[in-house]
Image (cartoon, rainbow, N blue to C red; front, side, top):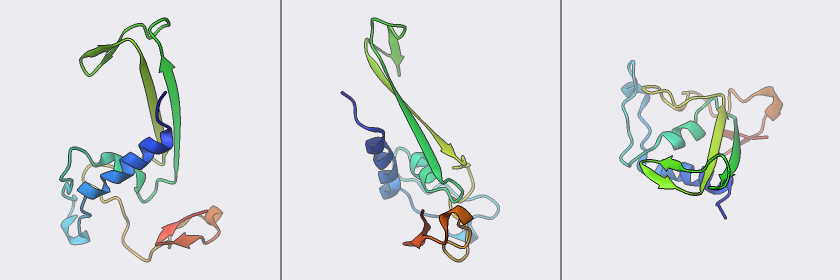
Length: 123
């Protein structure tokens, strides 16, 4: 049994506890890295200003099939679960801010029909 993609997406969002947003004046021309934990790039990708979709897939590989022996970070596993997620539009570019300055929700796509909640676009 494996955890759902939603569980992992939430855990990536939870990296927010280790991230501090740079002030606009600090991003001249590049923004400083404000992560104090092991990783924050999952979080910054999820909240990236132009990212509005995420799609995930799960594949379970058991030792009896093609995934006979999996090398996972130097350890050999007989069974493995792959979780792969893609974002649209991709973001989390090194040195760039994950947000755009301006009025909240001012650049929501027309398909959102003006939905704005907690300063975020929503459908």
